[in-house]
Length: 361
Image (tube, rainbow, N blue to C red; front, side, top):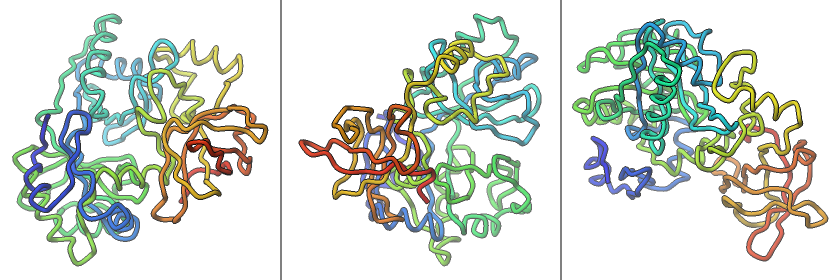
């Protein structure tokens, strides 16, 4: 099992470690609720160095990224980032990712840890198949990533940073000088919906920057946060988790990702998605709030009032912010409207739920 640069730091402060995508990762330090609410109300620091980073460079770099991704990479200017997905030839999703435009011939893709090898092979296959003049390099082992998230993240990081972070817009990045660390890539991105930054750095720098950030942010309530809080935070925002809410078999249009699926551009599997859209999508990923006592979990069945099975739960939790159970589920399209009553099969019971708008908070 792989370990990030911060493994000893996590274990020294008592984190509960779990196997996640082949990495030993901190899932909880103190409690999910404490870490979750710290991010919502002040700030939390995440080790997300397990994520994968690829560099695509060369004359056809932009064309390759455009072909691979569902979003319109042609619109990206240097310093801009897109959320996108890698569609497959059958209308499913190889992975969801962030696309960074460094310059017109240089892009960085940030992919999920569980899909690093699969994604690299898929991209390389498409590069060779379509004869793009571009180079693909896996930077994952030489790149660490810290996520400083929450309403006080900018204040904390600004004290260390020479550049003015307030001018960095959402889904933009800069190369900024952090005192004692030199120039690092800092992006206004995250997976929490609480605002903040993600910082890319070399593994040799990670432990020291982790320590400096926690010390600098102590008076503002900054604490370490684990994968469990990251999951509850993203679920409150209705963000998809690969392997739960989206995968090789799910359609990005049915997953509510039509906003990053630009059918007027050319990409892998576009014709399949167009045909599916024209013939009528069968299901939709929706948010729901459980009205009866219980916790919805992945793969629980969803029923209508007549006990007909109409879908399945993909993610669920007890919301720390709302103090009530929430979840995401694929349901037949006629049940997708806000306020629709549905039922979640929990063991031998059918618990009442109501379809909600997203995000939950």
